[in-house]
Image 1 (tube, one colour):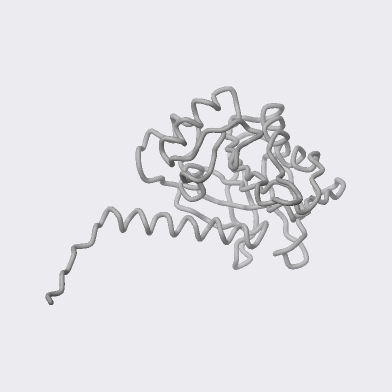
Image 2: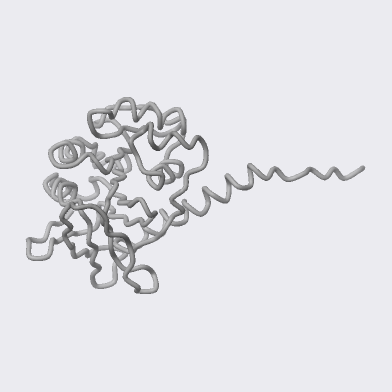
Length: 230
Protein backbone atom coordinates (compact mmCIF):
# COMPACT_ATOMS: atom_id res chain seq x y z
CA UNK A 1 0.00 0.00 0.00
CA UNK A 2 1.27 3.44 -0.85
CA UNK A 3 0.31 6.60 0.95
CA UNK A 4 -1.17 9.35 -1.19
CA UNK A 5 -0.43 12.92 -0.20
CA UNK A 6 -2.86 15.51 -1.48
CA UNK A 7 -1.94 19.14 -1.79
CA UNK A 8 -3.97 21.50 0.38
CA UNK A 9 -6.42 23.78 -1.36
CA UNK A 10 -5.43 27.27 -0.24
CA UNK A 11 -8.72 28.79 -1.41
CA UNK A 12 -10.79 26.20 0.46
CA UNK A 13 -8.67 26.71 3.57
CA UNK A 14 -9.17 30.46 3.42
CA UNK A 15 -12.94 29.99 3.06
CA UNK A 16 -13.09 27.61 6.01
CA UNK A 17 -11.05 29.87 8.30
CA UNK A 18 -13.10 32.90 7.24
CA UNK A 19 -16.37 31.16 8.15
CA UNK A 20 -14.99 29.72 11.37
CA UNK A 21 -13.84 33.11 12.65
CA UNK A 22 -17.14 34.77 11.81
CA UNK A 23 -19.18 31.88 13.24
CA UNK A 24 -17.25 32.07 16.50
CA UNK A 25 -17.93 35.80 16.82
CA UNK A 26 -21.67 35.41 16.16
CA UNK A 27 -21.90 32.42 18.51
CA UNK A 28 -20.11 34.33 21.28
CA UNK A 29 -22.46 37.28 20.79
CA UNK A 30 -25.52 35.04 21.13
CA UNK A 31 -24.10 33.33 24.21
CA UNK A 32 -23.32 36.63 25.96
CA UNK A 33 -26.10 39.08 25.04
CA UNK A 34 -25.02 42.71 24.99
CA UNK A 35 -21.31 41.91 24.72
CA UNK A 36 -19.58 43.34 21.66
CA UNK A 37 -17.74 40.85 19.48
CA UNK A 38 -16.02 41.53 16.17
CA UNK A 39 -15.97 40.04 12.69
CA UNK A 40 -13.75 41.00 9.79
CA UNK A 41 -15.87 43.47 7.77
CA UNK A 42 -14.58 42.05 4.49
CA UNK A 43 -16.75 39.41 2.85
CA UNK A 44 -15.29 36.76 0.59
CA UNK A 45 -16.82 35.98 -2.78
CA UNK A 46 -18.22 38.45 -5.29
CA UNK A 47 -17.22 41.97 -4.12
CA UNK A 48 -20.33 43.40 -5.76
CA UNK A 49 -22.78 41.36 -3.65
CA UNK A 50 -22.92 43.84 -0.77
CA UNK A 51 -23.86 46.77 -2.99
CA UNK A 52 -26.29 44.64 -5.00
CA UNK A 53 -28.07 43.56 -1.81
CA UNK A 54 -27.97 47.04 -0.27
CA UNK A 55 -26.02 45.71 2.72
CA UNK A 56 -22.69 46.45 4.34
CA UNK A 57 -19.86 43.99 3.86
CA UNK A 58 -20.01 43.16 7.56
CA UNK A 59 -23.68 42.17 7.32
CA UNK A 60 -22.79 40.05 4.29
CA UNK A 61 -20.28 38.16 6.46
CA UNK A 62 -23.04 37.42 8.99
CA UNK A 63 -25.18 36.18 6.11
CA UNK A 64 -22.42 33.84 4.97
CA UNK A 65 -22.42 32.31 8.46
CA UNK A 66 -26.15 31.88 9.10
CA UNK A 67 -27.54 31.19 5.63
CA UNK A 68 -27.43 27.98 3.62
CA UNK A 69 -29.71 25.82 1.47
CA UNK A 70 -31.68 24.69 4.52
CA UNK A 71 -32.69 28.21 5.56
CA UNK A 72 -34.66 31.11 4.13
CA UNK A 73 -33.99 34.83 3.78
CA UNK A 74 -35.80 38.14 3.36
CA UNK A 75 -34.54 41.71 3.21
CA UNK A 76 -36.63 44.60 4.51
CA UNK A 77 -37.36 47.66 2.41
CA UNK A 78 -38.66 48.59 -1.03
CA UNK A 79 -35.79 46.76 -2.74
CA UNK A 80 -36.09 43.74 -0.48
CA UNK A 81 -37.11 41.20 -3.10
CA UNK A 82 -34.15 41.98 -5.34
CA UNK A 83 -31.78 42.04 -2.36
CA UNK A 84 -33.06 38.66 -1.14
CA UNK A 85 -32.40 37.22 -4.59
CA UNK A 86 -28.77 38.33 -4.31
CA UNK A 87 -28.45 36.66 -0.91
CA UNK A 88 -30.12 33.52 -2.26
CA UNK A 89 -27.67 33.31 -5.15
CA UNK A 90 -24.76 33.84 -2.81
CA UNK A 91 -25.77 31.42 -0.03
CA UNK A 92 -28.39 29.09 -1.65
CA UNK A 93 -30.96 30.15 0.99
CA UNK A 94 -34.56 30.34 -0.20
CA UNK A 95 -36.13 33.81 -0.63
CA UNK A 96 -39.28 34.12 1.48
CA UNK A 97 -41.80 36.74 2.56
CA UNK A 98 -41.07 38.49 5.85
CA UNK A 99 -43.70 36.48 7.73
CA UNK A 100 -42.27 33.17 6.51
CA UNK A 101 -38.53 33.69 6.61
CA UNK A 102 -35.99 32.29 9.04
CA UNK A 103 -33.61 35.26 8.63
CA UNK A 104 -34.42 38.88 7.82
CA UNK A 105 -31.88 41.60 7.06
CA UNK A 106 -32.75 45.20 7.94
CA UNK A 107 -30.33 47.45 6.02
CA UNK A 108 -28.84 50.66 7.41
CA UNK A 109 -31.09 52.82 5.25
CA UNK A 110 -34.32 50.98 6.09
CA UNK A 111 -35.57 52.88 9.11
CA UNK A 112 -38.70 54.11 10.81
CA UNK A 113 -41.98 52.64 9.64
CA UNK A 114 -40.34 50.27 7.14
CA UNK A 115 -38.09 48.79 9.81
CA UNK A 116 -40.96 48.55 12.30
CA UNK A 117 -43.15 46.78 9.74
CA UNK A 118 -40.41 44.23 9.03
CA UNK A 119 -39.74 43.44 12.69
CA UNK A 120 -43.47 43.25 13.42
CA UNK A 121 -44.05 40.76 10.60
CA UNK A 122 -41.45 38.18 11.63
CA UNK A 123 -42.51 34.70 12.71
CA UNK A 124 -42.19 34.11 16.50
CA UNK A 125 -42.44 30.33 16.22
CA UNK A 126 -44.98 28.33 18.22
CA UNK A 127 -45.14 26.74 21.65
CA UNK A 128 -44.46 23.37 20.03
CA UNK A 129 -41.79 24.69 17.65
CA UNK A 130 -40.23 27.84 19.17
CA UNK A 131 -37.07 27.20 17.12
CA UNK A 132 -39.02 28.44 14.10
CA UNK A 133 -38.82 31.98 15.46
CA UNK A 134 -37.00 34.27 13.03
CA UNK A 135 -33.69 36.07 13.44
CA UNK A 136 -33.32 39.71 12.39
CA UNK A 137 -29.86 40.90 11.29
CA UNK A 138 -30.03 44.66 11.79
CA UNK A 139 -27.47 47.12 10.44
CA UNK A 140 -26.45 50.04 12.67
CA UNK A 141 -24.34 53.13 12.16
CA UNK A 142 -23.79 53.54 15.90
CA UNK A 143 -23.19 50.51 18.10
CA UNK A 144 -21.34 50.72 21.42
CA UNK A 145 -20.89 48.37 24.36
CA UNK A 146 -18.36 46.40 26.38
CA UNK A 147 -16.23 43.64 24.94
CA UNK A 148 -15.23 40.48 26.82
CA UNK A 149 -12.40 42.34 28.61
CA UNK A 150 -14.84 45.01 29.82
CA UNK A 151 -13.46 47.66 27.45
CA UNK A 152 -15.99 49.98 25.84
CA UNK A 153 -15.82 49.53 22.09
CA UNK A 154 -17.84 49.98 18.92
CA UNK A 155 -18.45 52.68 16.37
CA UNK A 156 -20.30 55.99 16.15
CA UNK A 157 -21.25 57.24 12.69
CA UNK A 158 -24.05 59.10 10.98
CA UNK A 159 -26.52 61.62 12.32
CA UNK A 160 -29.18 59.19 13.58
CA UNK A 161 -30.03 59.58 17.27
CA UNK A 162 -28.61 56.85 19.50
CA UNK A 163 -30.22 55.50 22.67
CA UNK A 164 -28.77 53.45 25.52
CA UNK A 165 -30.44 50.24 26.67
CA UNK A 166 -30.05 48.26 29.88
CA UNK A 167 -30.10 44.51 29.24
CA UNK A 168 -30.82 41.71 31.68
CA UNK A 169 -31.56 38.03 31.31
CA UNK A 170 -29.84 34.68 30.68
CA UNK A 171 -26.18 35.01 29.71
CA UNK A 172 -25.82 38.44 31.37
CA UNK A 173 -24.22 38.87 34.79
CA UNK A 174 -26.35 41.45 36.61
CA UNK A 175 -26.86 43.82 33.66
CA UNK A 176 -25.28 45.08 30.47
CA UNK A 177 -25.58 48.33 28.51
CA UNK A 178 -25.51 48.97 24.78
CA UNK A 179 -25.91 52.16 22.76
CA UNK A 180 -27.22 52.03 19.21
CA UNK A 181 -29.12 54.10 16.67
CA UNK A 182 -31.95 51.60 16.25
CA UNK A 183 -34.73 52.77 18.53
CA UNK A 184 -37.14 51.84 15.72
CA UNK A 185 -36.14 48.17 15.85
CA UNK A 186 -35.83 48.03 19.64
CA UNK A 187 -39.29 49.48 20.19
CA UNK A 188 -40.78 47.26 17.48
CA UNK A 189 -39.19 44.26 19.19
CA UNK A 190 -40.79 45.28 22.49
CA UNK A 191 -44.18 46.01 20.92
CA UNK A 192 -44.45 42.45 19.58
CA UNK A 193 -45.25 41.21 23.07
CA UNK A 194 -43.95 37.70 22.37
CA UNK A 195 -44.13 35.28 25.29
CA UNK A 196 -41.29 32.85 25.93
CA UNK A 197 -40.41 30.43 24.41
CA UNK A 198 -41.73 32.21 21.33
CA UNK A 199 -40.09 35.32 19.93
CA UNK A 200 -37.41 36.61 17.61
CA UNK A 201 -33.66 36.94 18.00
CA UNK A 202 -31.80 40.07 16.90
CA UNK A 203 -28.21 40.46 15.73
CA UNK A 204 -26.99 44.05 15.40
CA UNK A 205 -23.93 44.73 13.24
CA UNK A 206 -22.17 47.93 12.19
CA UNK A 207 -20.05 48.54 9.12
CA UNK A 208 -16.81 48.17 11.13
CA UNK A 209 -17.73 44.59 12.07
CA UNK A 210 -18.91 45.08 15.68
CA UNK A 211 -21.66 42.61 16.57
CA UNK A 212 -24.16 42.51 19.45
CA UNK A 213 -26.88 39.90 19.84
CA UNK A 214 -30.19 40.09 21.71
CA UNK A 215 -31.79 36.65 21.96
CA UNK A 216 -35.52 36.49 22.63
CA UNK A 217 -34.79 35.89 26.35
CA UNK A 218 -33.06 39.25 26.80
CA UNK A 219 -34.98 41.97 28.64
CA UNK A 220 -34.34 45.52 27.41
CA UNK A 221 -35.03 48.81 29.16
CA UNK A 222 -34.30 52.14 27.53
CA UNK A 223 -32.53 54.51 29.87
CA UNK A 224 -35.22 56.75 31.27
CA UNK A 225 -37.94 54.45 29.95
CA UNK A 226 -39.92 51.37 31.05
CA UNK A 227 -38.63 47.81 31.17
CA UNK A 228 -39.84 45.45 28.47
CA UNK A 229 -39.69 41.71 29.06
CA UNK A 230 -39.35 39.66 25.91
